[in-house]
Amino acid sequence: MARVPDPLIGKQVDNGEFIVVDRIGSGGMGSVYKAEQPSMNRMVAIKVLHPRFVTRDDLVARFRREARAMSQLSHPNTARVYKYGALDDGSVYFVMDYLEGRNLAAEVRENGPMPPERALRLMGQVCGALEEAHRAGIVHRDLKPENIFLTLQGGTTDFPKVLDFGLAKMSEKQMGNGSMMFTQQGMVFGTPEFMSPEQAQGEPLDHRSDIYSLALILYELITGKLPFDAKTPLDIMKAHVREAPIPLSQRVSGKPFWPELEVVMNRALAKQPSDRYETAAQFGEALLHCLPKHVEAPLPAAKRASRRPTAEPVSASSIAPKSAASAAAVHREDDTEITRTQRASQDPSSLTRGSRLPKLMLGLMSALAAAIIVYMIVYWFRR
Image (tube, rainbow, N blue to C red; front, top):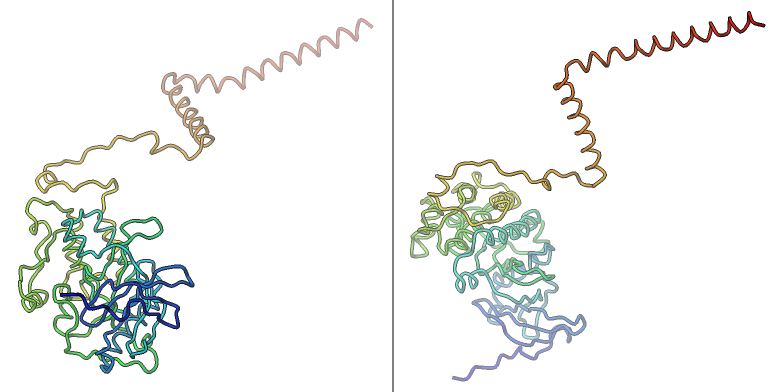
């Protein structure tokens, strides 16, 4: 069956400011297109709400809210939104960063679970993006691997971008005048696998719900599994509320994890928001502190138990002064102090000899003075 041509491909948007090149994705609410912006000599992405939803005020408000939320954020790990508008047929759209790469779900699906070192560094960056959003009064509410995109930016690989704020909860101040707040208590939004317990129960949410969801994403990145054995969406939601997460060390047979990481994950996945990290920045900092100083694979549990602490060799470079001049000064001071100590310990009488020197000098000076006086007296009588 032949593919039906997309009427938007080749179309000019915003009076020719953007030219649609191709459709790169689609979902239940709309499609995403690759477009050219000739005036800026760059490619952008245009997200368009399906025309059939134009009469749905709630969906249009949700779409507008996503554009508004993303446009207020400037963190480098958040996808930027440049413009919001409407097409000739009434469909609403917004223009955002065009990203090349793939999302975390596709990365794990193709390459399997990530090494913890890589996953923790990625999540540390995502925590920075969420911290900015939370400070602005924005809660994402739909964090999942599909909404974190890995791309290349400024020569940096493995650069994550947070996407899709379509379910974002915004404060009234952030919503602005005339905006419609349609989320009601008792309504459940989000993806069951990555919901917080309070989200699964339809309770009011704050930024700590995002922290729980982000911990679930990290759990899946490094194990390839969720922390519960539930199968259906309803059972998964119940597990978020009632069941303790399976420890990392028990989730994958034979795969070790650092004990510090277990502690951090347990706190981030706490059932009560008050027991989690207070901010995304705190969670990100805790994750990075789990990384070894010299990044190495974690030891298996048996080896960790048998290993005993050993003294580490100290290299000269690790204690060397910052400059050659300061090195010489430190060496001279140390050498002088050591020499003094050694001499005193080797010959205790050295201190006694040192105390006799002033008396000897005084005697010599007195004798010399007396000789001069005698010479002058003899000279005077001979005259």
